[in-house]
Image 1 (cartoon, one colour):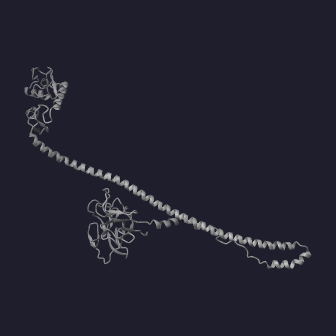
Image 2 (tube, rainbow, N blue to C red; image 1 turned 90 degrees about the vertical axis):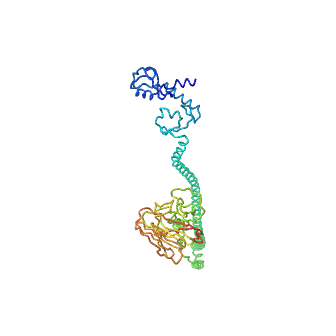
Image 3 (cartoon, one colour; image 1 turned 180 degrees about the vertical axis):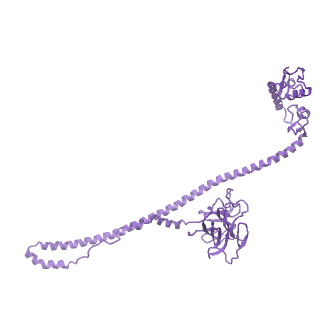
Length: 464
């Protein structure tokens, strides 16, 4: 039955299953390409089967037959193994280079593949595997990059949570210290107020008691004398001498007066109260002209909680964000400068190797750094290095302990000074065109001072 169906669905010209069949006026159907070729060869529009002349040079499509043919081909291809031709049920042994598809030997000789080029299936597979592999390589590289970026994003998301938790904890701790400081200051000031109230109230009570005693004594003398004044003349005169003597013997007290400063010194307690507290807080919370940016720090560095000191540590797993330096031991200040004068000091006395300077905003962060102006210690030798990497040795006889960096951006001057002796080490002159960031690098464990062991400590700037 399948053979009959296949015969019914085959073109009388090419003997293949209909491809884009058309129907002639005589009701015979052919592949469109087959009938058009037949007419070109015969130079007449007659039916290849019954020879009846067609009234149409462009016959209409036989949609029903086309659908049946396509369905038949699909069903046959579905039932056949993948390596068998769906049209001829022959094994696929060749590859048509023109149609770029596997074919059987019958397909090769069919009109569909006239003048086409072929290769054995194994050779074509090898060639096209190599071609596909080459075309696939950029996509594989892109996939690898996407995975790496995704991994970085996931690491950054995790790091953001850690940063938020740690930063929030430090904020709470610092506000707690501020509240404790303010609480102690309030208690101290209230205690001083209560003590002043107690002392001054005590003095007033003592003065009041003394006045009460004086009032009682004077009142007794006045009442006795007034009583004598009211007596009869004879009795008054008889007792006058004694009464007058008592009055004269009563000493006149000094005029009473109120002592100055008896009231609470309100001005002392309230005058510039907030400012005075602020001045005390400045000692508790000193200002630093440079705050390090942890997002730029190499994973082999650890920053202090106040972000003013740095020390080496075993590398940690941190996001490879664009701001972070890949070079060992490098970190930038959080604030860049594109105008004005700026100054900061760095304790370097305990470090075996270090670099201090400034970096432009465009500095390369993932490769070899260039474009830096800096002074540093390496292999026991001090040197100043400009942006072009030209090196100027610094012949020093004593070990540097503290470096002062003075940047005058507008005038294009960058000076490095020995802060201990106020001696100029080196001054760069350059016309700066972009924002400059404080730059610090250390490849060794640092021994600074007893207070700042194993750290690179930034000394607080003195406001000019």
